Amino acid sequence: MSSDDVSLAEVLVRSKIIVGVNAYNPPICFYDNKNEIVGFDIDVFKEIANAMNIDVEFRTIVPSEINELINGGVIDCIASGFSYSDERNEAYELTAPYLRNAVVLLTLRSRGINSIEDLKDKKIGGQRGSLGAALIKNNPEIMSRIHSLNDSYSNIPHILVDLKSFGVDACVGDISTMAAYLNKEPEMYSLVEQAIALDSYVYAFKKGSEALKTEVERVLYELEQKGILEKISRKWFGTDIIIFGK
Image (tube, rainbow, N blue to C red; front, side):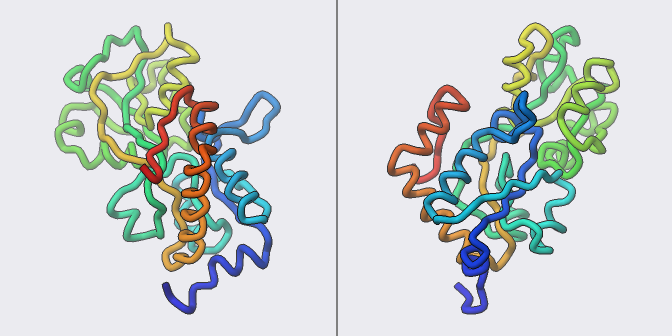
């Protein structure tokens, strides 16, 4: 750890950690009917801040802004469904994975798209800057089969509007988010059987902010040992899907 690393000291002096969250990622993070941000990662970071005896502030962000905001010091941490990749491991300080994730395709039940083969000449919608859209782009087999990928959407609800009006045939995203929409309207939506990829969620910090990352990890281990992470998981997912510390 570098002696120049003041990341933890800055947060403790400020007495607040600023966490960037994607607010259209239920049940990880989303707006409830009172227009308040709630979700799994919100509860986790409230517990982390409480254990560190500091406050927490949540800033809503979109994936395309992440580099600018974290490198500019506007936010201290990226949460709400940030998937691990080797490229991201080079670009940020990442915690150990805390949730298992799969990148999947949501479609309309009426479209009859059950497998990757059924995507021939179909249009896929993805969120700008998301891992799901990047995985599609970098998969020659899928790209050669589909008609097109539109990854200019700012959030998942915008894609689903186009999905319902047949502007796109499928939406790429994380299983936790897609399952939330599927469970809400099971007669409307279905999932393509094969996942695009299996990965895991991590919390990300600015490169060099090892002290802050290490402290957050230490607190996460404490929360896992006390059963608090499991309790939060059961609240939002109905089961224990925590992989941190296991």
